[in-house]
Length: 439
Image (cartoon, rainbow, N blue to C red):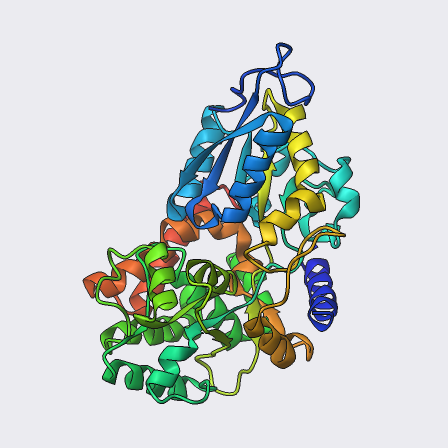
């Protein structure tokens, strides 16, 4: 299934770029959106803070104004979202719809047990790449917004580069470090990082895949799940982490990284108080939302010499519906509406991207994505991020490894080797607790 999703991504990406309180609503009434007395139907939603976009808010507002359907949104910090989702599912008291990456959520939470089967819904027939959100059992449980989720790289403020006399994007890690030093010498923070543990890990999932290569990454992912190898058997993991930690040691990261938020990172690059941030291209869209006049670029960067590819996040932002929701008919109506141009165009109005559905206008392709297309997408120089191959371990990563990435520079208590040794112990215990054969 993963290979099919990857092939579908590469084909569609090239074509697209070249063309430029669970179930506790007011009532349950078959999805008509209003109660028998004509009142407003309310459904509940859990949304990650970084994805509470203006476009999503506009879609929610339109629903209430035109359909009498109100969505009571609970916005949660990104790094708390997964634990909260699991807690609410386990308690049986969860929102009607949940925002998370699709299909990544399938590998974290059993979709058949927890989420409503959407395979026969009207919007499924309009998906550009249905296999992207199809579970291993052949069913579709998640509603995606994007057909091509996004690529990873350094998003940077071109005006800051120009101010510092930097005329070209770096192409090697050595050149990149030189750029960081030049920016630092000019009194500007080279790279802005927040405390949110999901953010620093993007640099590692990107470079783990690039350093190992696609085939070796796939081989490792199969062996590690069978206990045929160890995380400490791959020295490249520790080397990547050490290069990441060196960015802090050399003063290339903002001093307040232990308290700064993801929104702070967006504003820092938007306002030019920091030059760069490593993330998916969705970060660039957020920067342009914060400052439409910002002059933004994006470039790939590998810690390994001679590697000239970009990695891609194989999951789309989207929603799943709680299987036991008392308002499931209304939820299905909402998702069908959201797949139409009248609603989905609002999602992309201020954040141009590549829609999951036919006839939806994703907006003009930003300049920074055009450059990425010419250099990486059209030539097929795109590979999945490392996390894609070990998605079954996402919950373990979030509770342990990602936290170490933040703690290590803050406390100065671990290097790459020590982090991987500690994580190997976490991994072995986790697999034993899960009852996985071979552990």
